Image 1 (cartoon, rainbow, N blue to C red):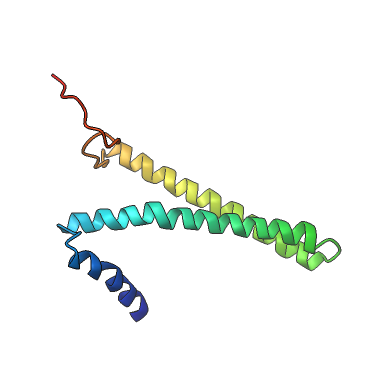
Image 2 (image 1 turned 90 degrees about the vertical axis):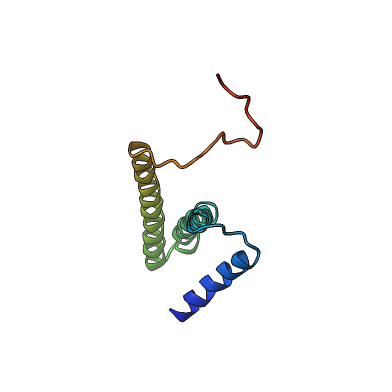
Amino acid sequence: MKKIAYLGSMLALPMLAFAAIGSIQDLGNFFINLINTVLVPLVFALAFIVFIWGVFMYFIQGGADEEKREKGRVLMLYGIVGFFLMVSVWGLVNILIGTFNLNNTTGPSSGFPQAPTK
């Protein structure tokens, strides 16, 4: 637990030193952005690797060995269940964001300025 606290402080202290965080909301947005851009793709990649490793164990390593075929089948099942759970949770979060209007975007998604509307 101490290692996680040390890692978190190592990530947060440089941002405070360079005044990258103006408020608690900026810190929250930073962590949400970190989760969306780093953690979610990493978890999807791990689930894909588990599925591919299961396919490898089932078809290549377990050609004649029934025990390895069973391990490969279980890994493929875990990979598929992992994909299903991640996509389901992602969909539920998007439904909640749309339902309660929690989308906190303040402007257009592109970096170009927009002409004022009348």
